Image 1 (tube, rainbow over the protein chains, first blue to last red):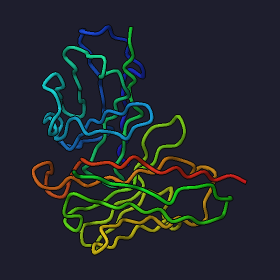
Image 2 (cartoon, rainbow over the protein chains, first blue to last red; image 1 turned 180 degrees about the horizontal axis):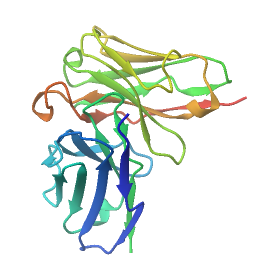
Image 3 (cartoon, rainbow over the protein chains, first blue to last red; image 1 turned 30 degrees about the vertical axis):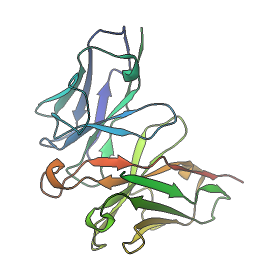
Image 4 (cartoon, each protein chain N blue to C red; image 1 turned 120 degrees about the horizontal axis):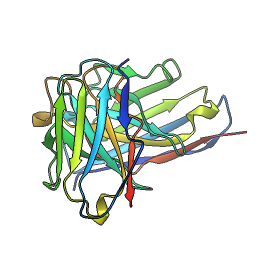
Length: 107
Length: 125
């Protein structure tokens, strides 16, 4: 099983600032890496797939990048609606596995 | 619009059974693989199972293998999860999610692009 880790667990950011979230896979997932956003009481929403491609309707302030087994989600200028929980997920092997999540909250 | 709606959650005693359903609309249900993903209270996301679009292949998390069965009825655009021998640790919100397909995928490897709102399962005596 591929283990996904995320850091930090919590990121405190002021509105308008940049947020950088990290995700690491225990072995290669190639670019089969997705990022999801989840707000309290809501279902997850796909933000990024293929490590760096925005899903339909996702604002350009969200971007993803990859370097080997390390992945980064960057939110360039945080809006009020971006304060949420973010998960990474690999979809190259079974079982599909998620990271434990990073909470982005208001500083 | 594209939508998934889960139902069937409830309170069940340990060792009991429950069947969840997920109805898809606004898209060609029979053309997509479908997942179940769960989230225990205050915890992260845990993938549970996937069934291919035509029912030909299915995959399970080790934590549910042998107890849960995923199935689908493409004529009714419905995905199901039969859960037997339930345990306290199965308590969670259960989401169905669509395997995205098409340009989102690398071969058969696809993210989950549409999610339902979830249904809550509580296993307690």
